[in-house]
Image (cartoon, rainbow, N blue to C red):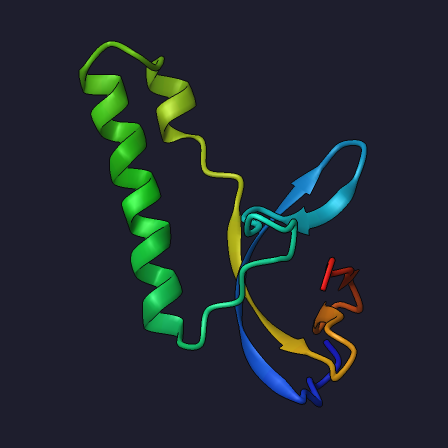
Amino acid sequence: MKPLDPDRSGYCLLIQTVCGGVTPYERDGKGNPIVYDSLQDIQRVFVEGIIERMEEFLAGKREFTDAMTIEEYITEVCVYPDGLVGDSEGNLFRTNA
């Protein structure tokens, strides 16, 4: 892992996709990766997503295995002065700013 040397650091939810590789799981209305300032903030969002899936299962809207499958993960990122978002693995995510 490479150390992060950010202009601004934070946390993103990422997901490994078959066709697109690693990509942000959440984006804002402009298509920019959502970056959380604190680990606790993103952990809360992550858990809320899990709870939502479980509630959908209980309501009969989702299969059990689908509700239990968690593909997204939390990682530390840095936001460069040009708005580019990167993680410690060298993945870079463009912004639409």
